[in-house]
Length: 106
Image (tube, rainbow, N blue to C red; front, top):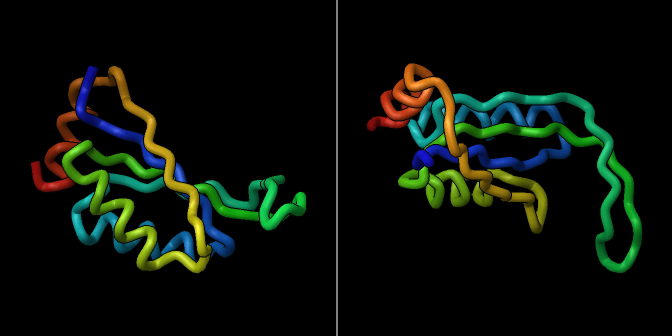
């Protein structure tokens, strides 16, 4: 078990996804953010089934910075209710996990 997290969120445009990713890394609350373009999402919103093209962000961070990640995403996001799901990273290469620590300011 580690203190590392993978936080998932989606954005409605590539520009928005890029701005959020850039801010998270610049603020040192995320070590890395992968942007996966043009995913198709099907979801229920306001009692209707919706379908849209979105951009998935995979955010690597630590538990210490989780709240700051959530706050940054909420502040910058155009969605009223952005997806914010954190998945624990149980294991990984020690070198990579150390790099995550160093990248978010230890």
